[in-house]
Image (cartoon, rainbow, N blue to C red; front, side):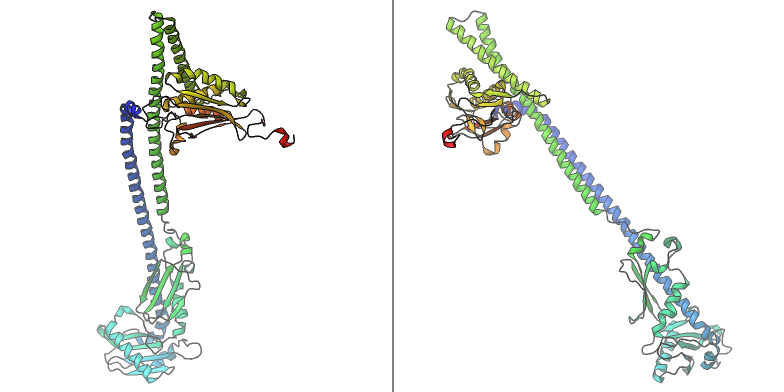
Length: 563
């Protein structure tokens, strides 16, 4: 765990082991990127297919609007025929007996088939006959100014000469400054036009005379699309003259992107605009165009990218954990080998009688005891860490007087410190009773002292202090090493992490400080690290006091408090 070290030996030990995880990460990383790329391509293809589907649906809806517009244009022609042909039939039906046949008096048309097309507020129907052979004009019915009659005659003659076809039927002319004129043509043998007969309509009633009958005459959309719904509930219809005057508009207008228009050239150039109402699209059997899937696809792609990043981070974390565990096994192996080698060496010395004096025998036995204690400390750390990893209960807490435990532990550690010229300085406040376990406190202090011994300088002075702070028992260990950078002060408590300090490489299991913090927290305390006043690192363990309040050095005497 958090035993600090510069990592030179660690890098040398793990170079071979790190090759395979790094290679695996290098292989899996591109595979994840490739999978992300494939997901991006699939998302684009799905978006493209959705966009194409939407465009096709929108095109179909605009086509249906165009169909409705052209159907209404055809209906306008039918309505015009229904209005004008009965009045013009006596003059236009059949063929002239001779190319020199005289004009039929328009008064005869007015008498035989009177047509009520008067405009509201005044004005009646004018009957017009134009001899296409010599330009003679004759009128009946409502009188018009001669100039107006002449304009109507000129427009009619020009239209017949430029656009006449036998199959064209009745034609409506929109003459500027004159009422709309519906006319038919009298032809002679071989289809030659000889005369044109017309009647005037009211411009203000073209909507009711032509558009409404056209809407009633034929459906504007196929029944398999509308499902039998009425036209006015699906379509917005606007009909206007060539100069922009609206002659008809649906009662309820609704803006729509699915709009088309068509011009009724035969019916005065009336322009028909048909629009499918957006509110009615769900009721059509083909349904509304699909909504764009781009937001959903982008969300899914971002989520996939996030999952890939998390997977890559998790993979790197797993590789790092594998490396740390490998370092832990290597560190523990080395930690076990060193004391075992010492024990074996001096045990062989005693067994073979190579000690030349009682002093040498005592020194050999002392070294065996010290190395055995180091082994016991390491085994205790590993066993405790294993219990924590498996979720087993820790040591049982109870009231413990700390000063004797700290002093005894320091005495046990003193021979190891003396061997490298390290001095232990004790500043212990007596009578402090904390909620803990004596063996656990001993293990905490041994781990802190071992850490200070490994990472401090040779011949350093290690200070061990025990006092009260903020209603807790405080155990402090100061060394004279290089200290710990602020960025690494939380990492040192993590399992298997050994932070570089720039000193000579130090072996370790990497779990000593992790055990310190876990034991402290198991008793309701805490473990912290900071800077020692004289340089180096200061490790502080806080444990809850066993009593609610015990007088400390900072407390005033009872007399001062009035107790």
